[in-house]
Image 1: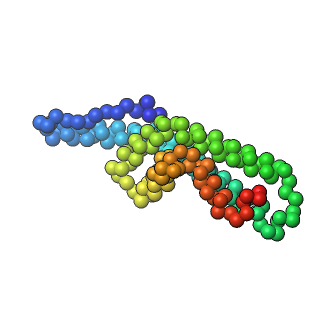
Image 2: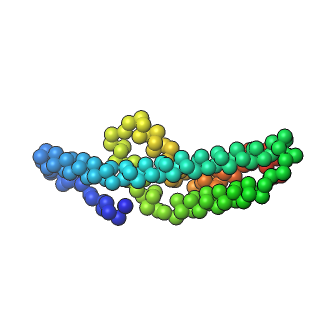
Image 3: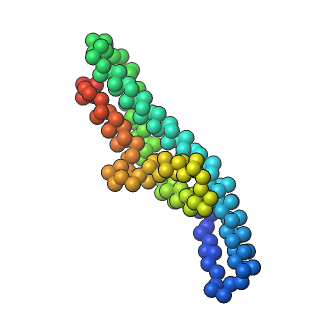
Length: 164
């Protein structure tokens, strides 16, 4: 998507008239509206992906917690449960790596933040804050493989996770 929206410099000469400035502002507003129309559906998809991945990490955590529960230690756990956990971990790792190698995702998100920054609402600011952690986490330890490292941290919080 980022290649479809070229960067347009709206710098005006120092001696620009108020009509020229008004025209430039109108063009800038129109460009921003079009950028928002293009990027908003994609940002919604990223938001849904983020929610899915967080839900998957939570599910993985709850299964590990269930398997380490003292009452369940006497039960025989079917091998299918372990295979499903491995498959879920594989899907999470693949999606996490795809997110990391797609630089256009970060560029489009940066452009989206600039466009909505002119007219922010509380709802949009919260959305941007949530997606910022996912798209380009400020924590240097989790700048790459954010989902996988979050999953690891969640599993480490479970007492007895080594036995599973």
